[in-house]
Length: 67
Picture 1 (tube, rainbow, N blue to C red):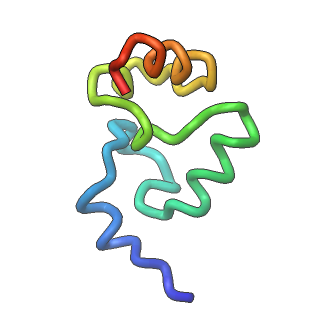
Picture 2 (cartoon, rainbow, N blue to C red; picture 1 turned 90 degrees about the vertical axis):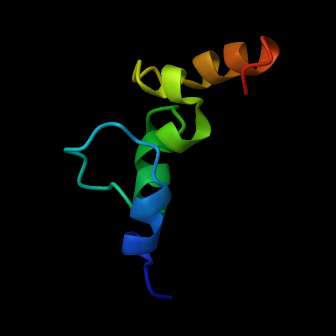
């Protein structure tokens, strides 16, 4: 399977421009899951910008209806 990095970059919500995994979703997901996190694309824009991508933060956002 070919990576569609250029296509993914058009939709990538990650604000960390220096990330080497930006647009390579499979690597991004693996990286964040190892740290008990979700990728930035799972969060609303304001929450993503805090860089708190923890499962706990995501659960708080879901409970408050922001996700």
